[in-house]
Image (tube, rainbow, N blue to C red; front, top):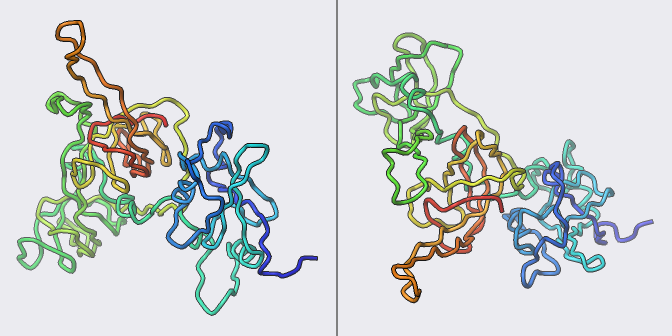
Length: 369
């Protein structure tokens, strides 16, 4: 019989199920590198992410699952919650990660999925909503539905705003606009876009964009609209606007993409290599938490959750000490960070910078970690 119910901690490994579900064979645990001074215990707090927690122990946080030990006594062992204690231990010299969870809170948390459990006088959401996410979701939320990457033909063939109602030169939330090109009245919601700059497949800062392959165009999100009256032109009401809505702006059907609470960070199964071709908001230096655009997409086998290492290309420099006249040498590439892909298109993808160990720039190389 168990005593001190709700106080006694039992060692229970919470298998990060989304990661463990991957079919690729795990690398041997002795290949996983611990940080120089990892904590022996860490208590998960609200606001933590699985990546951040794992980063306290491991050099490569996405390899968390290779040290994770599951315990079948825990119901729904695929979630980690605030209050759980992550414990680092060793089994014959091999590092392992476990979770200690209080009996009452552990069973209640697990039971919260698919059932209603009264814990205290406060509202509780479902288990998946209360578990900590894999990555900082707020950093990527707006990028899951907008902007988009489109072809020029897709934009020029899309419905367009011909005028704003009530003789307005520009429109905003609450205004009405007239739109031509809507042929289906069964699409009630649209997103308003403006054609942005092309994404060129340029591999270096000195390369010319005039000869580079265009991978797609950024469709700049302007706002959302709802069909009020079908016809030619159709009448739409603007529900929200990020910037002023102008004549000539294009409309694409709304895309509802559910925010994934638990992404599946993993390395690509095959070798891939590409470049950072753009940085959202156009900064020159890239840091942790920023969004980058890669010249890799579904055509190259890129998937949501793929983890890639970033390498700064070594400079070509003159060697004044060489015995060979006018000799030069290329310095080695240096690993400067890690990104995780969270949205893919046919020929490009969006990735979140998860780690920044050094300066990163546009045109840096990305490849298997």
